[in-house]
Image 1 (cartoon, helix red, strand yellow):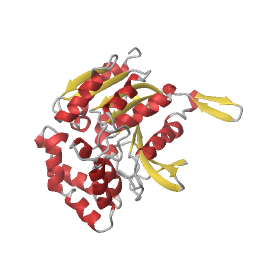
Image 2 (image 1 turned 135 degrees about the horizontal axis):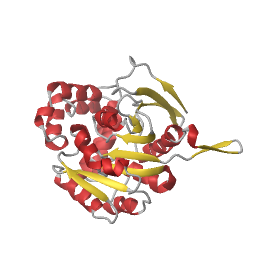
Image 3 (image 1 turned 90 degrees about the vertical axis):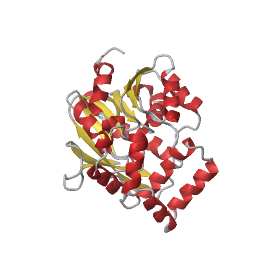
Length: 320
């Protein structure tokens, strides 16, 4: 496992230093692209899982945070500019990836390095901001490694994929996933569900609230993301619930109850009803700070300045 710089001509970012993290999963090397901006204490910025998932959706928020943190934003394996092989995408992949990435990239700061014999021990707690489905993964790691994080901020957190949320059984969702993974029919089905008109419809329905921001050029960029080779594999896994790190609300809430670090949740006032119910259950737990702002599931991309204003006391305060 190693990291390398990428030339600006080879990657499109939001103004930071773009690098690749070479990560091995079951004897296969994956190229994971991440971007670093700013100086200060480390902050991990995790975009949501979706058909159009990319670190650029948190790019504007990263730029707002950069004066106070060294922000690291990733493209998840199977999404964005990272490798998109035809793996059986499942939670174990992302759980192990996130643990390895945090250890290799976020917690290797020399000023916080202790030496025990010939072994280096890294002990720099980081701030984590996770959007959407990334919430479960960062919570699981925080519970597993209590000293790894100093604060966690969840933006419109979700834990259940679109088809299960719509009521599809595991059997139906599994059939859909295998269809999309198939060579010919799968490519056709995927293209039908990633047309620019369909992407625009989905953004208007539950991602953005201001239709004026859903411009043709905006949708064009999102569509280009969906058309990369191998894009359908991880996308199909997310849509069908195969990337759900937990499968019951009680399991999700138990993760939060097991935390020992400060937690804050940002909710979009126009969130879809089922998602809003889950978020309300989360923020009803003791010790969870929360705020409701304009927006829906894409509030971190649509209203980054509003997000920062709402959470700056939580992020910048030494006492929470």
